[in-house]
Image (cartoon, rainbow, N blue to C red; front, side):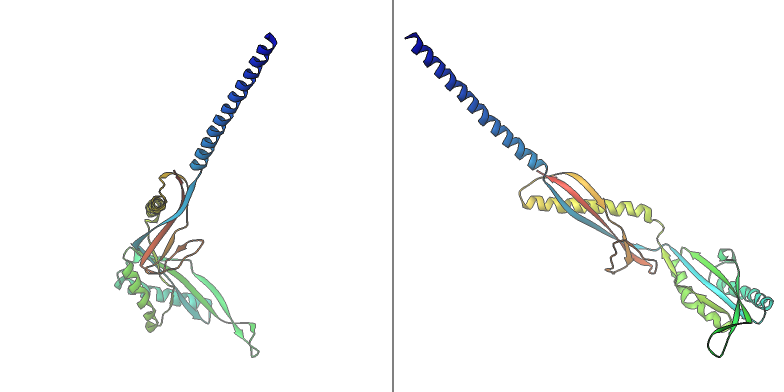
Length: 250
């Protein structure tokens, strides 16, 4: 009789132990599943691209050009170059560019060789060319533009002046770069929030952000380059900044 009771007690104990183990296992599965779901949820992100655009007007104009003189001898070419320089200075002063604002580069020279009947250059020197480059800068970019269109008229005075396309710069680009990228990041956050709202999710903190290159183009241009664009040909420009950002969604 005692043996039977003892056997029953052992059986009940084993059943209780298995029951406890079973309940513990189920609770463990529930906890693991909840933790896994929570972890998966916290690891979900959304990546969007934001952009910002701003119109700017160049605040510095640069005009460069070169005086060319050719003569039979080096000395006469040099003398003729020095004769023409005061004429150019006078012309530029009339256009509103004082002498101290005109930058002259080093004088360059080279011989001119005769071209033979066969079309090839011979060793015979038939003259010399002397040239000198000048540079003008002004915050009045429209004055630079006007000058670039008129300066070729110096040919009427016998002056061979070859003008280069003017450059129009925006000198505050460093400060504007920070501003435009901040606006692009805000735009990325707005886009991400709209997507999260559309899927009944909440937008969490930003996980990462990558700044794209700046595109500085003429106004109304759609040009884009992987390496960025820095237009110097136009006075009125547009600057576009892009930011790619990843946000946590909850």
